Length: 521
Image (tube, rainbow, N blue to C red):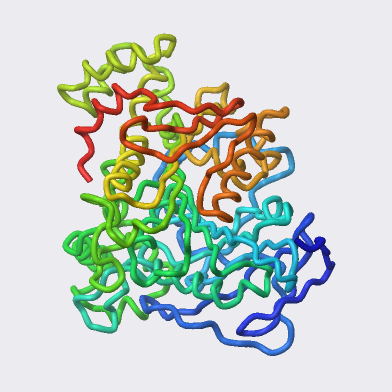
């Protein structure tokens, strides 16, 4: 590979015009590059071209999402409770209905590097989040990969199913996913200029980003646009059925005081009012569990999503794409920001919570958990059981269904590295792997802690994902020679990422088997 050269004013050519980026460590960054444009509820179109050189030095706006009238009390996400460094308030991220922008980090331009491309899909399910908070410079700065993040339409702007009101709205229920397809098409057509290989594209994402990845795997619209997939804590077994999607749209009309089918009013309505209507509907149609998508999320569509990706089995279209699947050991502590009592349970309260989740199976399951975790306190047992039920169970189901369909290999992991934040009560919480995969442990010291261990784990995980992007397999040892074989239904190998990476075979297998009857998707 050629020697990296970093220009203070790098300029790249795209199909729409030239863009000027900036140096970012050992890489070049191009931020806020338009990849599409779209009218409300309509499929995206190619962006307009420009003359001259367009600055690409700051992120484009995120999708509209912020609730102007949030419910009282602390947010359910616990991250706001973790102290930020002095003098580092979170910068406000501009939001816009027009949010189709992507960001690229690359070691070099036009050097024939043909590097694999890692396309990050942000989390936040399908209602929130942004691709404008990640930093791909440490990954790209290695010299062997190009990193891309992007924003796309969300919530009511990206997933309002209006097809019953006219053929022009045939794909309005999946407009946000069509944005992602348009971004992948832009990458296919332009990434060689940025030193990338359009024939080796990895799509990866956490939480909702993993679900988006599953949609793309099953969608004819994205066929051939990417070649490997990774889903971190984001099992995407199934999406919305049309009747449920229509019901959410009908409720939106009522909440906005409109006649049923008054699409003209929706099209002309100020964006902030439409967003407020969405939040009103979302407050009514709450998810029952982590994999439940009750409103304004991708919906089955004869052209874009003919069937569920991994329910009741692996869709044929998903089977040719090799995949990494995994979860974090104590996922659900992330969602306990408004549940302080959950961190201070006594035995009776633990038993009550287990019964609320597992009914007449609660006692047997609690016995299994106490045997598997003899030193755990009641709150730790609750967080563990809730996490396994909510995320481990569907992640392993997705892996099992891929294996049963004789798909290309699937590699399964669990992140066990415990966060020291808030006195260590969170464990390996949801989203903890993000800064590890981007090889940016220094940006999350409050979550990951000080010292060498987070940096070593970040090198190990990011190197594995980069190798997978390049080769489409993980036939390499990790740090200290730990092998990582593909998942099968006999040995069930799972890589445990921690201060020392170890391979486990069917970890907590008895619990896995006991929980299997609770999988309904």
